Amino acid sequence: MSNKTLRISLVYTTCRVVMLLMVGNLCIATNSAQAAFHLMQIEQIIGGVNGDTTAQAIQLRMRSGGQSVLSSSAIRAYDSAGATPVLLDDPTTSVANSALGSRVLIATPNFTNYTDIPVVADFIMDPIPTSYLAAGQVRFTNNNGSTIYWSLSWGGAGFTGSTTGNTANDANGIFGPPVDIALPSTTLQALLFTGAASAQSTTNLADYVLTAGAATFINNAGTSFTLVAPEPPSADFDGDGDIDGNDFLKWQRGESPNPFTSADLELWQEQYDTTPPLSAILVPEPASLTLGVWAMASLAILVARRRSAVCLL
Ligand SMILES: [Ca+2]
Ligand SMILES: [Ca+2]
Ligand SMILES: [Ca+2]
Image 1 (spheres, helix red, strand yellow):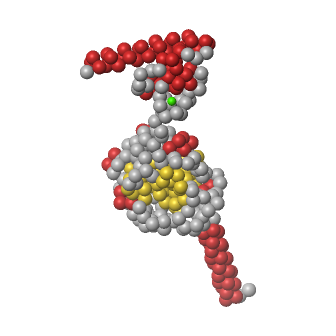
Image 2 (tube, helix red, strand yellow):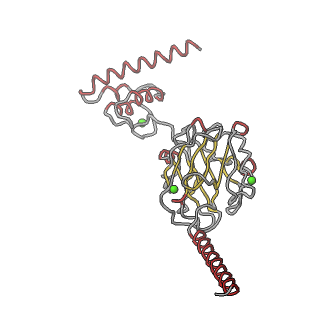
C-alpha cells in the first residue's frame, strides 16, 4: 500500500470513528432525555409541623418532562458546616408521572398526622436531624452524592458549608447564599420555591419564602395534602359535646382513647369544668364502685388544687 493510499485509509477510518462516536453520543443524549431525573427543583420543604420534628416533608418538582427516574437520585442533609451527611432517602424506583411540573413527595411516616387527608407519599424519608434545623442544607444528587443537582441551605450566616453544585439547574452552579431563616418546624408553614416550574435556581436567599399560611404538599399523582393543626385532646370521651361524669365512666370502663391511663384521667380532671353529677359517677355497677370512690378522691384533690391555686393568686 502506498503512503498516499495509507493516508486516505487512515483519514477514512478516523472519520468513521468520529461519526460513530457522534452517533453514540446522540444515542446517550436521547436516552438520558427519555430516562432522566436531574432537571429537578427542591420546591418545598418543612422541618417539622407545629414543633413536631418527626413530621417532615420534601417536595420535588420536575423542571422538564421525562424526569421520572428517581431511582438514580438520593437526598441527603448536611449540618451547619456542610458536613456530616445524613441520607434522608435513596429512592430505588421511578415515579409514574413525568410531565413538566410533576411533583414528587417525600415524607416521614408521622407527616400524615398533620394533613387534612392521609398522606400518600411517593417515598418515605428519614428525618433531618433536629440539630440541623437552625442552619443546614439538603442536597438532591445522584445516588452517591457526587453530583449536586439542587442544593438548599438555610440559617443565613450560620451555614458555613459549600453552596455550589452542578449547573443543570443553576446557571452559575452557586445556590447560595442560604435562606436567612431556620428551616421552618414550629408552625404549619413551609419553605417554598417561588419560581416557575421550569425555572432554574438563582440563589436560595432570593428563591425561597415561607408559605403565607398552612402549606399544601402535592404528590406525584397530583393529590394535595394541606397541613392542619392536630385537634387538641378532649376528655369528651362519649362524644356528646360536654365533659361530665359520664365521660369519667367511659374512662373507668377503659373506653377512653388511652384506656385506663392516668393521662386520660388527668385530661378529664383538667377539662371537667362544671359541678360533677355525682350520681353519674357512683351509680354504676358494683364492680366499679371502688374506682368510683377513687374518682371522688381524685375530684377532691382537683378541688383542693384549684383552691390552693386561687389562694396563690
Ligand atoms: Ca437512588
Ligand atoms: Ca446561582
Ligand atoms: Ca361527654
